[in-house]
Length: 598
Image (cartoon, rainbow, N blue to C red; front, side):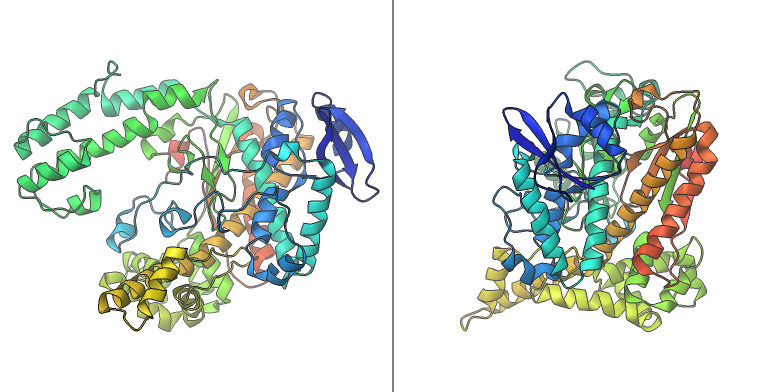
């Protein structure tokens, strides 16, 4: 059964069985919608609606969790850009009310190099290796909620028509099977994003406040800096002989640094660490505390923590690669020193799992590179590269893989990349082709069918100017530079986008397994703050690209841990069939997130 959900006029909602007729099986008020959905959910329908965020929250508030849906907004965004649907889109144009996606021209998230992906490709504890090869540290926040049409106001007839259009586009695509899987996974991701907000991440405010007092000092009066920051600021000013310098003003700080003989172009951590001066160490410490204060200080606690839960607004599909973003709260960059505040409820546990070196394993599967897959046998992919004799040590393996993904040609990474090319020619050929496509302005596509955005009009103007008879050598250099930049983006788009697909399939499979566990479980200790839909059931509470946290009754923790592992194994099979690439997990059952940091 496939049930379209849309408006029917006069504040009513119509539910239409798309497998039967266009006549509503029910027309209800907004207040009557939850019980109607509860009754129909027993038939395991696929709910078809414009935007999951508009319909699902009220259902969860009523304790109703739906099994599956088709999110027209998210699926339309994928179909509107995918290289596999180009001909079908011409035959079946999209309706005006359907919003654009982040990869489409004019979409809500601008698809340029600086904002397409806001987190590093790899899951290192620190960003030093990335910065060493020139990769900027990014945050993971979307500037605002991805804009959409008011999907809740779309008539049910329009919802039904758009669903049928999307099915036609998929059927006429060059890869219908892969696209169907991607759209199903993306739609489950939409459900999970709303569920993560509804359930919330368990958070102990008292623990967080103790962390702030330890790191920053007592909570200051309004308008004052914490004591430890004031002390460090005084040390910096003394070392720079600049008693009035404002350390929070980049212009003011740069001027003081240069006057002191520290010639830097920015106040970035990596550049500052290149200099020896008494001001550097306290300045770096000050900047670290300033980031903690602004990102997760007392004001953040007041805004984001309520009833023992942190409820960020996740934005599934919020970047061009399909990775998620958040619209406030900083959920995608929780610093280590506040993770101790993530504490399971009494009688419950946290199952924390992350996929070990996900992206290189995905690359091995994409390229069908058996030698690279062999290096991934076991949890430490980088150690496997060393054991294969490609490089001498694990640090070199990290540099080499990062260099391959980001197209490094100089430094340690550039020196090591040719070794990878000799050892893993199929994998390197895949990313090299993606880079070459990007450099000539073409799009590239993930494993299941999500395609990259086209370069901007400014990018094409630079290329055009360099091809004119009157072009200068500076024009040509600029064109080569921006072409290489876009090639680096498309080089890792294919891997990162495919890794995002693996993560969606992992979560989707896990979500089903958790529901099955909950169906037969008897739970004594309730997680009431998680809401009526989750207070008795193990449920996802956190997602970060290749890491998840499940909040579970302690008596079910072992079952949940097994489900997490089996879901990861199943996601690999779903995407890469019998190709022998492994996706091992680092998994721990803990009371506090901080205890799962290895």
